Length: 167
Figure (cartoon, rainbow, N blue to C red):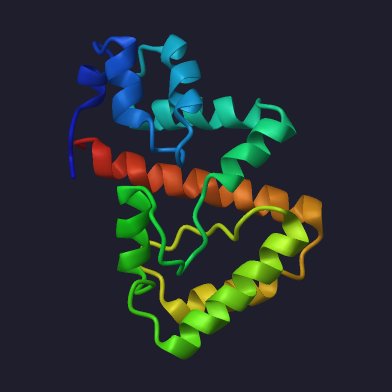
């Protein structure tokens, strides 16, 4: 759903700015709060870069908290509207019982290995492609996977920004 233009965003008071962008990074309004001071933004890409820089300059503990704010893929629990829409676009709300069990097993193994949920920009991906990525990435070393998960978070944020802003 398109809400705004970058020109309008630049006129928003801080609370309006944060409200609009609070879930671009899953349940992490602090990203928008900190990026607010970097206004005005000349484009959505410049805004995206400012949000990304905010996350990238945060401590590893804060980044870990951001990763942990994401829901498990295929999990049938409460999540943000954006996550629900993204997971539905990938068919994760219609998994067969066998697929659901596989996702649960992989999610649990991944969480045990890394301490945060498996994160992937799943919009319009297939359950099979997501499962293959989970099976591959659970074998990564912790530092490699931490970086991969953050990059996926940034991809998700970019997709969410595209949903918010009129081109």
